[in-house]
Length: 118
Image (cartoon, rainbow, N blue to C red; front, side, top):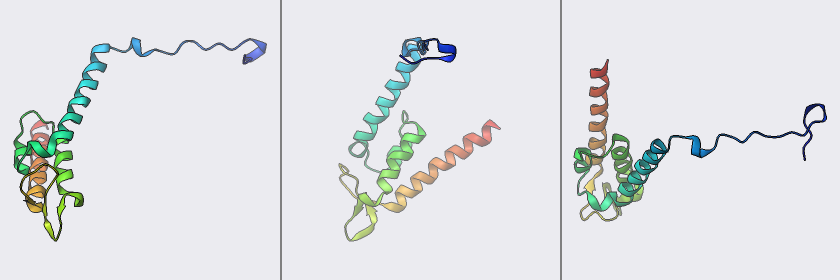
């Protein structure tokens, strides 16, 4: 056993356990995170164009941004057509310019909300 100051045996007080945290809040955050993962894993097949993502009423802005970012990624580029993106599960390729316009529109929404809050 470790020896503490002045030859006494060092004991550690039990750290605050996870059971002391508000369970409802933890569960809520965990469920929200799981919900985002579910949306992200199904994101490509659920939407047919970038503005469907922007207009989705229950997605948080950061989730919309993440989905659109994956659409804009080079991994979704159509071979021999660098201006087009086709995420897995999406039937038709979409122009990368549309994806970037959708991302810009989210930035506009954020700016509008920020201006109205000030």
